[in-house]
Length: 131
Length: 131
Image 1: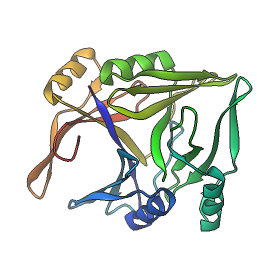
Image 2 (image 1 turned 180 degrees about the vertical axis):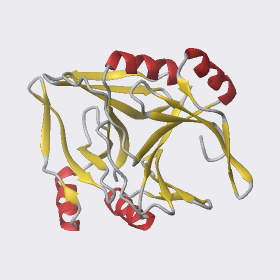
Image 3 (image 1 turned 45 degrees about the vertical axis):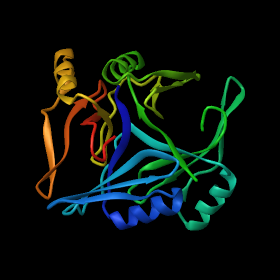
Image 4 (image 1 turned 90 degrees about the vertical axis):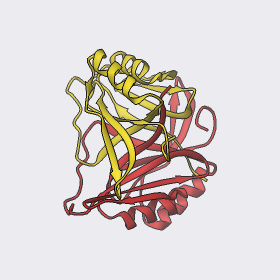
């Protein structure tokens, strides 16, 4: 059966992206492949073997565009408010804390942060179905 | 530490998307939340607790756009050629089998398939670092 193993995003500055994903989510480089025109950098941490694959096209200078279809990667964290405070202090583009409700009951507490290339990441408080 | 748990894409027709992800990758609905204006549908299989989250905005009629930044989700499968044959027979938009090389050595055998909303999925033969 098929197993989902990674999601790929294109980034302008791999060092900038690696610093963000490391500092924000503890995702470290697991492997890197440099080709003539591009590089692939895989990021993961001990929580999951699912990886984020960064593609760096060496000649790209124009910012990548974001269509209306793709949404975000989501992560869970233990202490949402502490993480929210930390993200704001880091100066990252961080949205407000939101409680999502379904049929009147709390479903999830979340906020969004935007990575250096404009990709959104949803940060969810660990609990319920989000573990 | 943060754990990656899902990736979200917006889709026009949830039944069409669910059929594709089920038939292509064995990903079944794990949970669904219907709100007034939108629905969230989580897809997973036994291989990984990482989920694909479909967002269906009920009033959306225009096809979603795809920017230049976001790439794809990747899955690994055991028998790439059999899956490639099956995908072609299903009539899905399926690219050619490709062997990626790094420094002259084979790195991965892959093909791409396009889902009903135009999102690419990379299908990789299980092996090496792709497990």
